[in-house]
Image (cartoon, rainbow, N blue to C red; front, side, top):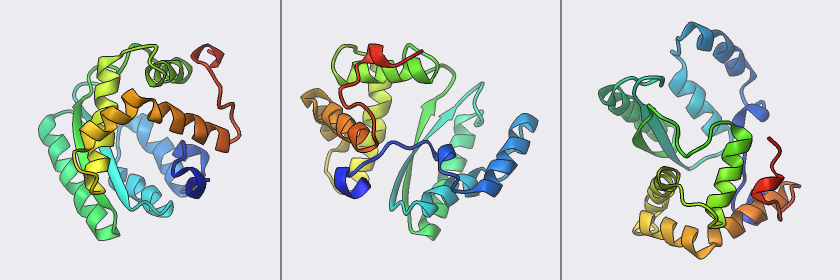
Length: 183
């Protein structure tokens, strides 16, 4: 699928990549301890053969990373571990004290993402985060001005076209409309 479409949409929890890690997470999360954050995330990226990784680290109240200083330290650790694993890693540190976009919840967020991709909605903070992350990844892979490229792909409709191609290759309805997503 990835060879054919050059992309995929995956929720790592559904892949059972690291069953032992999933048990640790179930114990750590309610206790607010996460000593295995880096190895947990990076092991899963290595398991799927990632060569490049652009990570968003939201910081602030209500997030796992409370301060910008802590976010910078965590980013440094991610990049060092990425180097050791042979994964080129860069981090984007973002303000995490409020949701991105206008919706909360998987179905509503999917509807909103489809609306942004097809031009029915302009959601500045969602677009900004996507452009920054995609731009970072494009720059890491030598594509020049990554953010400009990411924005041109979004505006041209190529991002929506690719999303629909990936949806079809994964057995979904490539003609799905935002209203088709059940809430």
